[in-house]
Length: 193
Image 1 (cartoon, helix red, strand yellow):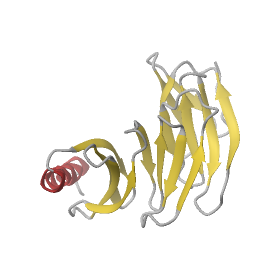
Image 2 (image 1 turned 60 degrees about the vertical axis):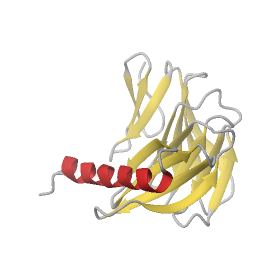
Image 3 (image 1 turned 45 degrees about the vertical axis):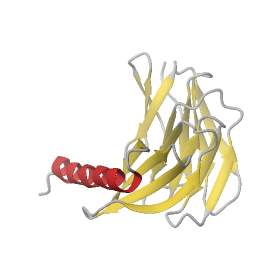
């Protein structure tokens, strides 16, 4: 049996070595996500005002997948699955979806949201959950890389200052809040207050 902590520690060590060598200290680590077969990382390079998406597989060195320009050096959220990377630019309220080649791309504005404090892409890759600490709600959106457009499926209100979001294999959704509480929502966005 593989020791996961040692395996991921190995990935991190190699990843940071590649940052130090290639970007010489100008990179800022932003986020990391483990998929079923890879470690996906997002790095912000302040000198070039660019974000890079990197992928490590099978314990190998991190390889650059693609880069995109930053809009006003934003604060971003990132989540990834085996075939898609979803990035939310919180400064301009914009959601981006990319394939790993960086060739297929969709963008959607989220201007109706007050603040975007959490992002989670559901395992089917067709829906994203966003938490909004200003309006105290969680929104489930239908977002697909191969179809232009975005649809709100449901909004769960009255969650005080929601932040991080996750889900389990049964479809239950877990929402952390700034008030040290975890709210459990059904797949339909319902919780008992």
